[in-house]
Length: 317
Image (cartoon, rainbow, N blue to C red; front, side):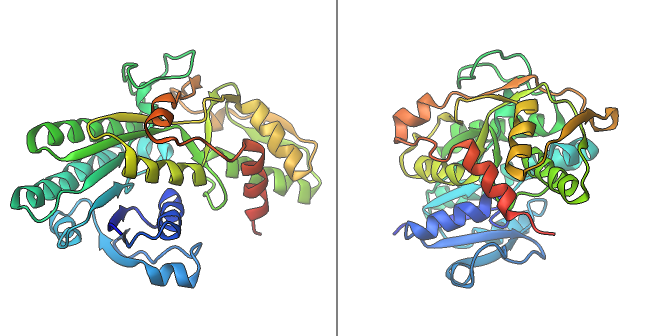
């Protein structure tokens, strides 16, 4: 079975992808941020089955050490993934997401030139690169118009991928997923944030929950479906292409809030707090994954109701 390197293997998506790869029989090397431990969400047998190595994307020597052995596939997930963190530290976000991707690709290109490896590389970008001008599900030929530091840094990573592919012949596939969620996601993200606040309100006997803007429409992808899509792209995607990963179904955040309240079992009232409003919120972000389905046969399997139920069940005090 071909070997796979997963960067960002300790992150939210990374841990689910590692599990999926192990279930499929792949030998997996998981690159973790310097000083991090393997994710506790994996059971002891899963953690023991992975070769764990440190990776610091800002350090070229660290990147070279990761690639000291050849891999057949690379799935590059390591990134600043929080939009809030990216707005607070835009320069650092660019250094990690764009320049870090360029470092990964340059070392892989050196291996290819030396004839020691020629991996298929899947780069995880984001549907946020499309920006704020859509009113229908987005397709890969739509222009990219990033309107946040996070989205701009991901667009920069895509440009690095395009340049490296054209210059070196690397086999690179770009994935543009919509917002992912699921059990184990931290509360910087909307679904677990709503679930935690609503659960706290139920336990306290309160009804009013402070929220930000509930008018945007989003396409939420279960993280387990995301893992399956990345494996499908790794195995059957066409190098040089961009693929959306999406359900194609949008939900207004107000409706999402009410669905989560129902799952938690609380009759809640949402109260908009100006302090929680985000600048440059994208009003509509829904993806069309027809291209991915045609290329790989992938389709989302887990409905939003199940994802919400699993997020709520995973909450701990």
